[in-house]
Length: 72
Length: 447
Image (cartoon, rainbow over the protein chains, first blue to last red):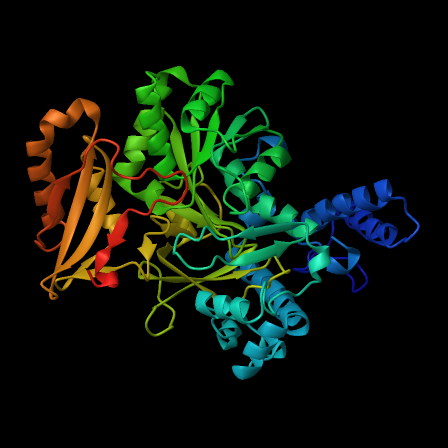
């Protein structure tokens, strides 16, 4: 049984350690792309990465959100 | 090893049905909320229907969401060009513009997509390509003209994502494509069923036997129902010496929603972790059960730039349980793929005629190279149906027998309706690269 604070998939299944890392990577990338001072090469390539990570967390049921506010 | 998995997404392609439905409800609730908040067009429609996203407590509550039709979309687009009030995202966030094929003769639908939408679009193709057996070692040849028609663009990016060598053949002649796909050792070709037949003709004219002289062992067919017409499929598979997979999609969702895996025979799996598919009686709008013919209604959980909820596709399907396939996926299937269009049935002297059914019979006659169905009205009252045939060059002497056999077979398949069967000169009938338009209804123009 998962505790209330334990992160889960959208279906309520506790995350594996690999899934936690993927979700953390996704969240970190979301934070990074919001920095307005990023040079174009970083800003655009990070968005490409974020779009790919969005697909990963969506496919694995770790998160499901529109994400458009991040410019992807 | 997970990399040897027959599934692109092992967990969700084999998810128990109850969990799959919980996932669909979770996504539906959020998608409806997004559409309500961000798409003025969708919100107006929801309000007119008395629907609010808070009403979605069970998956059955989806029936509170009003159906969306292509006509509504087109009307909205016409009233507020270019895109109407459908967009749920700022246009400057888009990276791609595409349209429908426009084969209906009307203004095509226009769509915009963002970076992450395109990631998702190619992902849906990846479910199909991987499930059919395409792997990083494959060489995939995309035989279509690119341009703004969405066509196989998603398949192109899917192949790059999978890691296959991806060859874009836009702007090339059919002759050049045949030579190039042989020369480069393509193992997989992606094209419409009509064009698969056309390339066989062209190869024959070039003296190339694709079954023997190419490395192609997989054909990804999309854009038309032909891949599931048994006679068409047999012609293509024998001519190419390759297996076919039917992967059907639509511009309105930007990608495919069904695919044939290696085990599903004539049936196509629905990608149910990314789509909610319903089958309804096209007249009443009420759901129909497994095994019954109905119109498919799609809700897409992927593209949210233009949110699509309960869109009436016009496609006729027969849904069967996932157990009809032994592959282990828990995704239900459409038996025979898209079996027709709710709006393409013609009534000739009281008999229902589907162009796909006529094609199935014509393709049982390998002497016929190309054909056209012509509907006319004689003496302002009597409808006539004529199948005009072009024969293969080596079969022209067989015309009297072919004409007789075909007329009999067509009548037998249509409650003894009389079909006229006429011959066209070589090269007289049009050839198609994308969606074929083999039906000419001259009745609509008062002739």
